[in-house]
Length: 187
Image 1 (spheres, rainbow, N blue to C red):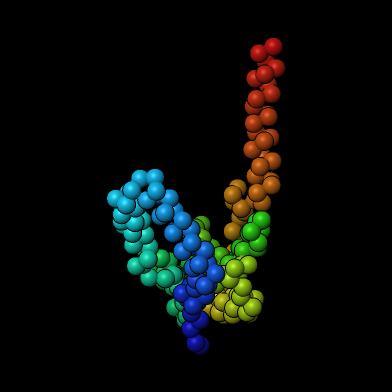
Image 2 (image 1 turned 180 degrees about the vertical axis):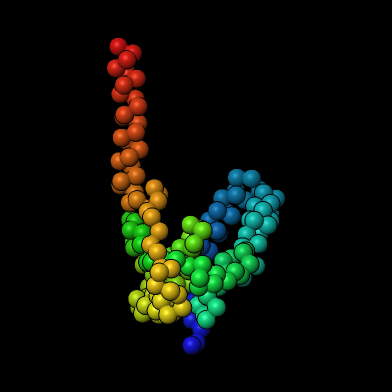
């Protein structure tokens, strides 16, 4: 079987539109800094920005590889780590709906209860992936062929896995449930 590789650098490239917007914003901010504080402040701002941004710019781009040994994930500044198939308990599509559009990626759950997202296999409004479903099917198929059906166990849902509206409702319920008796006792 061949390996499946998902690289972020192949998908996440700056568009000319985005580069122009960032350039105009930087030039406007620079002109305002020079006007208000002088050119020395601009040099400090550029130097500080370079020092903060340099590690991220020099970091290798994230990637994931799905192969016979398991799934290897390399994320940004982290080193690559291979997760063998016997450690992977469940694979599912993680979806997030927000006002900025839908976001989908593949989430991998491990035997120790932790989970990771597959770098590079993402579908959202700014980075559409027409073959996302096919790639997900290929990863799941490889996982199912490499693991015992008894080892495939869906993890229990965690508190933070609830939809945001349910989380807000629970927090409001807790606040009202604790504040209301306190107010009634004060009277």
